[in-house]
Length: 154
Image 1: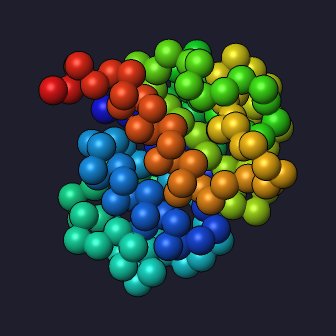
Image 2: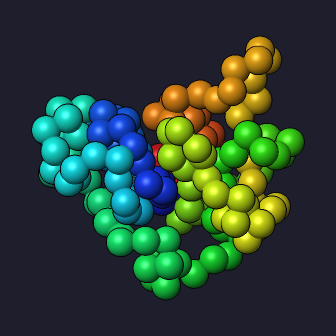
Image 3: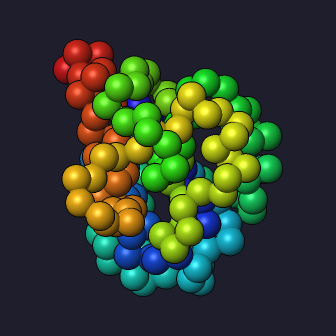
């Protein structure tokens, strides 16, 4: 359905939770190294992903260049960031789109955001929070994309 891209994730439990979500929505999960933990088969990843982890379409890449070589940049790549005013629900998502989420402690690099400024999206917050948990952010964006395309998947 969609592609979820985690750039240099730091917390194994978040990766497992996002993997479980990706499975539930029939999304592919793309993980860009280096991670902030050991290998992806670490116990904490599997525990959060439960038994869904083994049926998930998950792909690992040594770096973002390797990922972009296989999935060239286009206007169907969307970057979740607090550094834009473009809210996610004003975008028109399509099946096969790529949704990028950055490190829990730093977000996505500025160099990514300049590759497709029209594809930068934010989740509005009405209080002074810096950001949301990455697993929550992925859920919000992925379910909006599903809502927009739901008739295609009934």
